[in-house]
Image 1: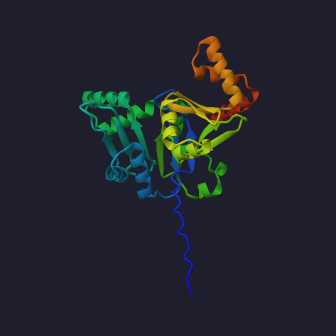
Image 2: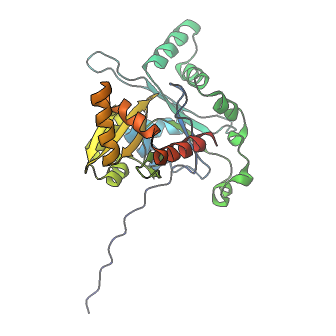
Length: 284
């Protein structure tokens, strides 16, 4: 008898976060998404994702997630183009592990304070980062488990116990969702550039360029528009009718296509319902 080989099941991606709080609309550089986990850390998966996201060697990320500390990005052609990555671990285990990135301006401030006060860079990096965060998030970080009432959480999430780590992220990741307003007013969630590309029928390279640089992208007679607000992508898709209206506004008013699309969206009751839901959700 012939044995029928079963297809090898695709390994499901590790779940890195089960609590996500979005502060991406806050003023930069404090516009972060706080991504937390109540389950035991999968160190290998956690390190792999952060290594890929921040373009840091895997062994360095693994060490930092184990020991804590900072990684200063190397200069490229004698020029510093990025700041640093930090991982803070409470030696007493009372505060959840935290990771974040400092941009160039924040890194420069941290270096100045380090030299002026003689304080280790890791400590100064934490000071500089935390004081730029929204006041609401700063207040939550002073409380255990972000001050969350565990009775309001999904039972499976709460069952994990205390928060084990928090990644403060600004990238577009498969491990948490971002919203796109569709022509019919729907708010569709996508996690990561590949899923976003698949939803809209574009290539991953096109999607990556759009969400990193902003601008527009024509798709089957419709148009995708992305504005970078405080370093974060805000995306909407417009149908052919609204795209024509926007092009007419560009012709009449001599304005940029993104400004024209914004005007069209604000005058479209259907799209405005989606925008209102997005804004309400971000305040909840």
